[in-house]
Image 1 (cartoon, rainbow, N blue to C red):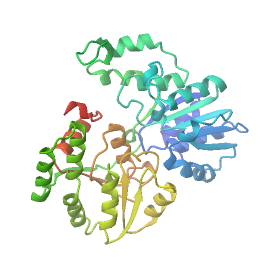
Image 2 (image 1 turned 90 degrees about the horizontal axis):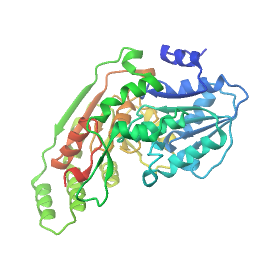
Image 3 (image 1 turned 30 degrees about the vertical axis):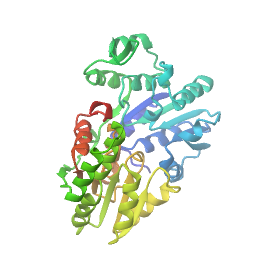
Image 4 (image 1 turned 30 degrees about the horizontal axis):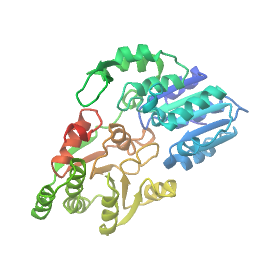
Length: 385
């Protein structure tokens, strides 16, 4: 018999035909979704998921004995598919949450999902730990998908100001200062909420921010960059890449003694490849956006008694790394959502333990990114140029 937590039982008992599960990462959204599907026997279901967890979803459907006709596709496959099903489950629905009613900002994913729902009107379940990414429109889009209609003009008046800027020839709408504080009442009203601390006793985790001194060689290389004629954005990237080199790797090698399993998170692909090549004291796994069999890599790393798993920071959602308790951020993604999602990979409700999160700061560019993320906001290079 499947053992559910109280928040899962409560949701299944309510059994809504349309719902948004805003449950913190690691609190069991997948199992709740499968139980929701099972309450609708003989109904076919389309499940749209990130590429990295497609196999996990397929395995979980078998594990939890879901007998429905289930089609699991990635969000990339969804853009070009038109599969009619009775039920729809969208995992990590924030990936579809671009502004629906601002044509120039609407993504292909958002448009495809909107059209699918409008055409087939299935019972639907939308899953996300992060309903708001960087813009008030994100939540409005997700509410629209769930059939909760709030006029865009009303939403726009509540969350935006019409402003004029010297760099833009026309006035445009800009989110009001402090708009994030106006979100919780709306989320609480329209979404099902679950925080891990409300569901179970959570261990106190450790967070460390460690400044890594740059060698004279790296400092000189940065000076040499500044002496050349670079476009501002390219110069920023070039300096940041130099901040994320051998100094951090040497720290990781020293720290890893006595710690058999470590997740290393990196933004830059060349950093991932470099670390994987140099780290020789144990098995090394790489997980990037181009990894073909992501599910197998994750499982192999989970099963390994001693290894490094080097993860591209953008590959942050929907999988378990609960056999690890140490995560080192060697370089940070600029998305606050990806930071939150990545931290949750080792903090899972079915196997809670005390975790250690280490953030390595190699210089001023690293610090600028981390400072912004600490504020709960995405990093924007235009703010520091």
